[in-house]
Image (cartoon, rainbow, N blue to C red; front, side):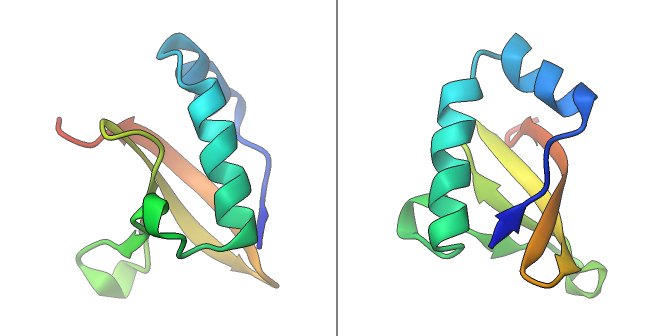
Amino acid sequence: MLVLPLKKRLAQYIELKRITKQFEKQKRLFEANPFHPSLHTEILKPKHFRIYSFRITKKYRALFVYRGNNTIEIADINDHYK
């Protein structure tokens, strides 16, 4: 699985929140196995939008969409509990 490079605003966000190292670790796990147990990968509701997420930390999640050819684009990174 290939994860496209983060957009500038998302790279700045993870740097601001000091979760860059955790993101990079989870990204490597995702690329090796998108359903690795520590990622908690899931499809979000409503399911017909086909937006998925995986865990970066207990607080932060990456929301992504499939772009085809085993490629995903991370659309947002957010505080899971807000």
